[in-house]
Length: 88
Image (cartoon, rainbow, N blue to C red; front, side, top):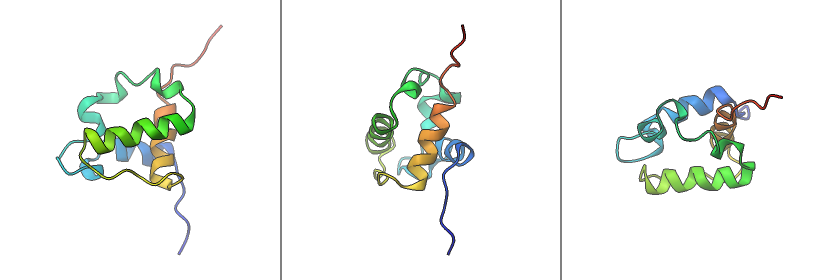
């Protein structure tokens, strides 16, 4: 069986899916289009993993994703795309 890799596209799919929780909500239910996550997206990946899992457990009533899992890495990768580009 091939290893599952992470990608921002998979992260976006998970972000918009109710499959991470048990209450029929998705990350996008509270953050449509990633709204309000722009600053969080600039966080260090490990900190962002912790925040993502807190939201999954508390807001979505789901189970935390294992650290280093492709799905968690994909969510973090997608959230990083929401961080505003730095320009001079």
